[in-house]
Image (cartoon, rainbow, N blue to C red; front, side):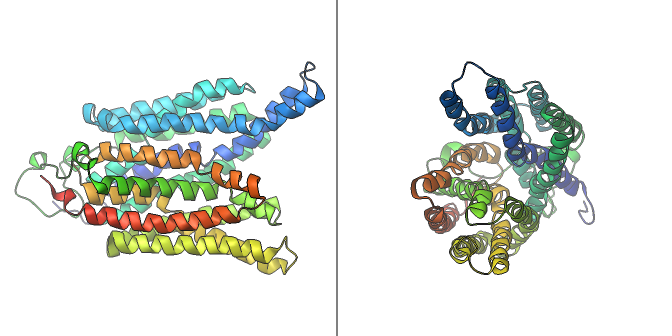
Length: 444
């Protein structure tokens, strides 16, 4: 049973690349583009309301950003609920059929958003469809596929698969901005709905298969066995047992910190760069550098995991995050509102974006990879689904903390110090979780 060359295993990686591109790429990376447009649309509608006094209008306008962000929050909460259920859904139904239904739900949600106009309440009502649908074709199901299909090169396969989230985000963000500039928000959401349907539905139907045995194959790199593929018993620890261990709770802390610090910085990076004196255009370029390096960073992190293991990979992550926090602080100190050398200040800022791109790769690579190595195959989807609840909490709360710190102190300095400290804690909890969970993946 040869596995050399291009096998179906790598087709699974391509499928995951496409699915993360249209799920995470749309729901997370494209959202920032729509926030500005929604803010402007709602502000224009409020200006037409003659019943509002100038003071009431000013208060209503100041509340628009929070109201717009609620769309992402509601979708995020639905994503959490969907993530918690996905393991049981996959266990009850065939995986590719379940994923197909989730893809249809997400595409339908995006289509309905194209009919919401300037009524934010309608976006709130539809948001659960988008978030819930994305949960069935994003981090957890793709993590399950890679974990099931790969024994060797699991880190590389994970890195390649989740590069789709960044590549999709970059391409779809540019496309969305073009459609918004050329047409309107309705057309932009309709375009994304069509892309989601055309890419995700056929991929789930024709390519995604839960286990190699569904294609008469063994996991990539698995040793030849005399038993038939459908007779192979899955090894690993069950959720019922694992949730009672310290390894689970240490890993839960790690997963929370991963999303908290990375999404927290990503969503506030442009605000910080403009606050220390860079133009909005330069801030956008810095974010673009982050996305480009992030694609490479996922491959590098996957390679490190494969060759050096969880411990070395975790140390790499912590060092890179401390370097990012240091560059953030130094960038703010040196620039002094750009009173110093503007070129040097800009170089430091771009270096910050690049280093952050390397470490930001852990948001989609680390949780599924580390979880798989600790818990094994038996109950992987269900365990990752529960851990994803902690990831989602960090995702929702993380961006708010730096903004709140800035509101209280007038600076992001304390936020970056906090994030650097949490990165160290992340390193400790991850390594301890792997140590205390040693042998769990081989349980019969």
